[in-house]
Image (tube, rainbow, N blue to C red; front, side, top):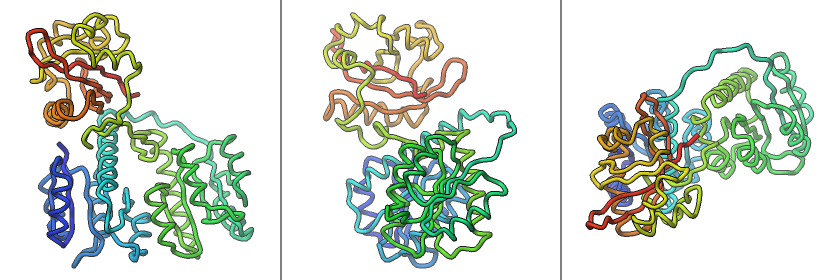
Length: 416
């Protein structure tokens, strides 16, 4: 199971976090030095959650170092609303995944950690399966600039037009028309344009065009704006006017590279991640159902009902003993995993699924099924017979054979 590292100089807060996340593998540190030692000793840390105000190195500086040393780790900053400089830095330097204000709400904190772990796994899967595409010559990228001030628009267009196709506009309606007709790499937007809220527009942009890199600029630092930009918009950078020409051009060039990365490796873009059920969050009743309600009803009836339609299901299905041994597999599951039925019956889940998934799957999932839910869903990474690493969504329920043995039976859907 991947680990979570909490960093805070107050032992009582660390203790409360341990209790809140008792169902996770938790490490703690009381300062940045301890945290860096923990990171060095535990390569499987997935998320670092750090307080901002600590003696010595503060949280944002720690997370900046974590980003440099361990860029795959998800980073979350705990701080108060007064730390506006830290919040702005978290956008522009630390690239923090989420900003959480203190005192936090337990449910919100668990939800945020659950999402961070899910994205960590998605990105790890993308790294395992990524094959670099052949580089082909590309044309000029297009950039959309939005500002009320015509002088600002003209200046930014003049700086960018030698390298990009620039659309300089002063209202969001025209911007939406451009977005629907042109492939835009980056949007540079003021906090208010023609009396409308720029943050709301960038939230809309995130939902509809997650591959576009967003940069917001403003006349002054605003704590509420900065928090929304970190948590809701996932903005790439937050620039405060007046900014230097070199700073602006460097930021746009970095945004261009980020857009190209997201285009090539979409799973690395956390803006496009829409969680269904987190494997690590403690499965709830609000899981997403399989492709058909009929399948779900079959799962929660009896083994005999499942057996009757088992071979004819268009979705991969199997029966597992609680120790992970595969007892039965239908043709769709054999096709998905590239094994014959005889080969699968000689295997166990341990040989097909990543170690972390086994640790959680055969303990926590069984506990959830026996005490809380009639069925559960989660994401897992598996390997086919030919060594291909793939991501799938599993949905399972408990069953009981005529002899009284408890089994898991369920479905596997490949995540494309």
